[in-house]
Structure formats: structure tokens, C-alpha cells
Image (cartoon, rainbow, N blue to C red; front, side, top):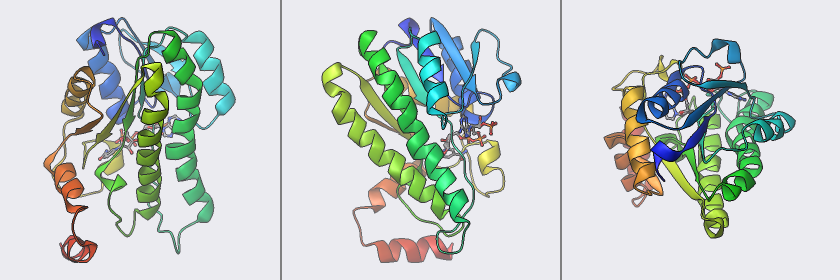
Length: 235
Ligand SMILES: NC(=O)c1ccc[n+]([C@@H]2O[C@H](COP(=O)([O-])OP(=O)(O)OC[C@H]3O[C@@H](n4cnc5c(N)ncnc54)[C@H](OP(=O)(O)O)[C@@H]3O)[C@@H](O)[C@H]2O)c1
């Protein structure tokens, strides 16, 4: 995937990582960047085409495929963390979290898969998380939603391989955005996340692990979960 030759579309591009992805794509020389947002009036990036898009609205997603029929690279970035536990949290909010990460990403994937295929194959980049791989009380709805989005990523990669469409999953711990503002700990600069992500996309990577935390969490999956969670919850 050559970013220079790409026509990219980024979801949730008005702030946070989505804004950094769109800005990096412009700076890296993408031919065109559609910066989409459910609040397009908040997109303040030079050099992008601003498009209204709520990924949970399947009809609107379909409309966007018509005005952005030249897209070759889709960055499924839009996301939310509602801080709900599963047992005691608000079930409607838990469902809304899955509506965003799982069904919203699936809406975009189903609508744009034929567009990418028509434009030579292209790539999806799905912004996942180290939390695809571990539970944490206080953010378990997010964990379930990210785990589901990870499974979606693995599944559509296989389903779309015959069309020549690359699917890259990106996992990270904390990045310096609104979503993680209340969480203590080291965090990545969104500009670095964007650079590492598109380096991986250009290299054809199936998965990009941005930081040591993601690498540690992924490696820990091979072991017994009890000592892992004892250590995690202790400190
Ligand atoms: N920050 C981290 O530490 C971290 C770590 C791992 C993974 N991630 C993932 O990185 C991605 C971006 O997160 P972020 O940190 O940039 O979060 P953020 O600062 O909270 O920004 C989230 C973005 O997603 C948009 N969004 C939410 N629901 C949407 C919908 N239904 N349709 C369209 N846009 C929607 C938001 O739009 P509004 O402004 O309208 O709300 C906003 O632009 C997410 O998928 C998140 O799970 C973040």
C-alpha cells in the first residue's frame, strides 16, 4: 500500500487520533484525504475534504461511499469509551459501545469493501487497543467492544484477501487524547501513533503494535491468566 498514491478516508477525524491520522496522511502526501466526523463543523485541518459521517448510521455510510468513490484506504478510527462495567452498568450504554466499535466499523467495512476492490484492492486500517486483549473493571464494555472489533478485523482480513484488500489492525496502550485523559500512565503522542501505523500499512503488516504495553499484553496471552490479572489489579 503506497500512501502517496492513496485516497484516504478517516473516521472520527475531528479530534484525537483521527485528527492525527488525517494530518499525517496529508503531510505524507496522500492524493486526497476525506476527514469524516459526526460533527464536521469541528474539523479544522488544512488540505482535507470534510465529510459528515456517523458510523452507526448505515444509510449515511452508504451515501458517503457515493461521494467518496475514489477511496483506496479507510481508517476505521472512530470510537468511544463509556466506562461501563458489564454486570452493573447501563445496558443501553453497553449496547451503544458495541454499536460503535463493532457494528459501526462493520457498517463502514461492508460499504467500502466494494469501493476498495473497484479501486485495486486498497486497505482497511482498524484502530484497536491493547484492551482488545485484557479486561479491566471500569472499562469492561470497552474491552468487550474492542475484542469484538479485533475479531472482526481478523475475520474480514480473510474474507477480503481474495479481493486484494489489506487489513491492518493497530493496537496501542495509552495515547494522549481526550479518551485517556483521566488515566494515569505514559502515553504515546498521536503523531507518533500515526507515523508508526502508516509505516506498518506501507510494509503490508497485518498487525501494528505501537508500544511496549501492547507487546507485553499480547505476549501475556500465552500464559495463565490468574497471575497476569493478580499483577494487573495489584498495581
Ligand atoms: N486514546 C487512547 O489511549 C486509545 C488507546 C487505544 C485505542 N484507542 C482507540 O483509538 C481510537 C480513537 O480514539 P481517541 O483516543 O482519539 O478518542 P477520542 O479523543 O475520544 O476521539 C474519538 C473520536 O471518535 C469519534 N466518534 C465516536 N463515535 C462516533 C460515531 N458513532 N461516528 C463517528 N465518529 C465517532 C468522536 O467524535 P465526537 O467528537 O463527535 O465524539 C471522536 O472524533 C478509538 O477507536 C479508540 O478506541 C485509543
